[in-house]
Image (cartoon, rainbow, N blue to C red; front, side, top):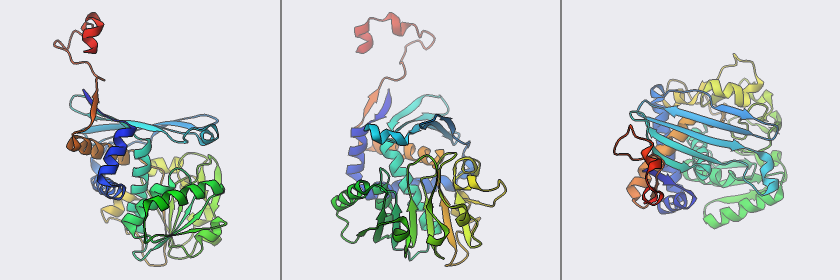
Length: 349
């Protein structure tokens, strides 16, 4: 039998920990795995693109455990009442190849993306950062707001989205979180939101080379958390921001980011730093308070590995989960046909 986490179960697990604690613990697990970067078998995700979206497989293994995530990205879906991103994943034992956990990852991907964003900001942003512009107020925005408030001490959020209804939705959900020390300001443009911000998070969904931030919006000392550009032909930052003399660009896994990140706009020899090197202190996060740090985040399979490993442990400790009969249990492992030969009622039992 294989452990199973569906939508109701992930709601239970997050509610019992509290969303803030859950994100903080998840960030700790992700950081621990980045610290042992060399242990992992790594590869860019396999993407199948269509005119309307992308379907991807994201594998990772540390030699003991193996995981993969199935995830799609279809920006048109919201017009049809569907989610832009859905996902599920598997955690398996390398020694036997048997799956240990089958889990939803739609909600968990939002949680791990926000946890990774805030974790990177703790390493890259100025320690006194308290104001964040959140440009793009769709499905990921609440998670980003929660993570930056919890992990980085953000106390003022400046919101902007081209769709006012998205901003209204975000404001309602933030009010329900009842974060008494969080000030929320609605802005009329991306430039207004970015003005005076210590951190700027861009998390837009359009599958195109967009220019959400232009060079005039970026001030010395800012940290840019570029989340929305995550596939070929999809970017958010004007390329001149990346080329600033005081800019330091950090990526998760360079071979993947060259294909999908903001740096796809630049020559293949443009210098970047992998986040694992920052965590291991092999590379400096910033040289001065005036540096502009850029986390060119596309999402990497190691983060899903961390999330699945964390979920599996949490689910087992909670003891309230269910299991599914995904793999046959046989008296004779050489007699697979016996599964079909047994009466249907016996199999069901």
